[in-house]
Length: 103
Image (cartoon, rainbow, N blue to C red; front, top):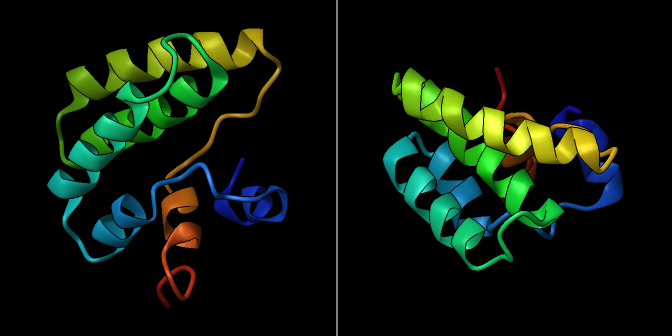
């Protein structure tokens, strides 16, 4: 599900500081903040899986494909089992103040 689609459902679960860091081009900080937020959730929960997926996508964006792919596998298994959609990186852009950057 894209950020625009998620926006209609609410993005409060996405850490604002992680979204801002990603939009500002600081992927490393975004990954750290997403991992911290993920670790604050019960392991195996939908909230954990959503944040793990964003963390994995951020790692892949930073060209850390192996770590990111493993994160996606963990997250997608849980999200699929719960019947939830898979968030993409646009979620971070939509969550940042002002919405996605102009392209």
